[in-house]
Length: 186
Image (cartoon, rainbow, N blue to C red; front, top):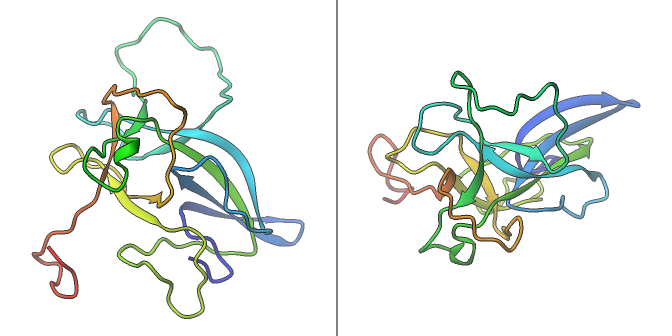
């Protein structure tokens, strides 16, 4: 949603040629929204730490054309590890994407500000919907990861079924406790 904005995560404001720009990650898609003030910075693939191990709680959008400094080919013991992400959705709206790798794009948008509003399918007054999706994260019994808005029209990175079970996206489901029910549901 945007107030002259885009809906997404991971935004940063930049000033360029007198305009304010915002960058954001669109998870589950290979293209930015078809809006005249939004342009593609790069396409990539979602990645994070292993789902069952401590480590990074962030999902990143790694570019499809990486460059490296002095890379050692041998595996080192004292390093942080990053893995490609997959949809883990065998019985949900994304059933056809189960075990497929997750694409992402970095978009740049002029003159906007971003916000992701969880638990809403429409915008508040004065805001314009640009992206919509499902809230996803790690599985409840695994180390926590950040919440991501996965595009409602998510697609696969390519046609291969990885099923490597390394960094995984699960749909988020609410529970009633300190969270008020209603208006929320268990």
